[in-house]
Image (tube, rainbow, N blue to C red; front, side, top):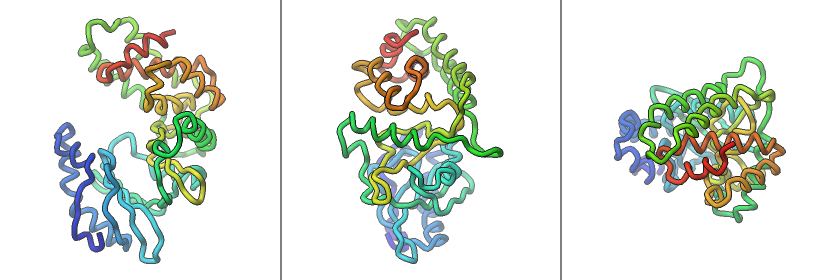
Length: 295
């Protein structure tokens, strides 16, 4: 797409915006046919078609700079969780994650010019699940570092408090068979666990095999982090939510990841239990996983 003459939304963004569940995002998506060409001109890019099926909150496409360098243009809806993506990537500075070359925010838009990992194949489509565990664990162990004083990142505790309040608003709609005492215990842990960490580091918070891509500079690089500072044990949970093994044997899966990441297995089980509770009102099957993990 040179000169942006054939703009289109990728499938997932198009469908999510058309669904109208988040009216502000729907309005934002309607601005992209004007916003993307402005960014292309600003950074002097030649842009190809967006990646498919893409994400629900961003328009992402391979591009080439005026000097012929391969890059990625990411134009995202400026939602809370991804607020410090550029700062996180700058902190990691290419060590296990893609580099960020430029960033700008305006209105509801966050735009990033990123390193293009080539061939860019997703880890989820490249190796068997057990090997995915090993790759992901190796990347997390490298990324977990303490940010310097004066950093901009929010705390994991603040994120958990936000989602705990959200859970309390939704819990009444949970099926009658759900034990309310167990739900209260889970959401209480969700609030308490981030406050009892004595080794806070910068977290990805959303790392799973769909957010790890094959590259030449390194075998694998992390993309799309949602940085917060807090308990590294939390960071092991998102990967487990992206696999069938969570339903089959959550305890064994949790213990495996604890071993790969040198984490306290009891603490990781508590985090996994708390997260299953927090997610279960809308995620079929997670309540039963929570019951199996309950302390």
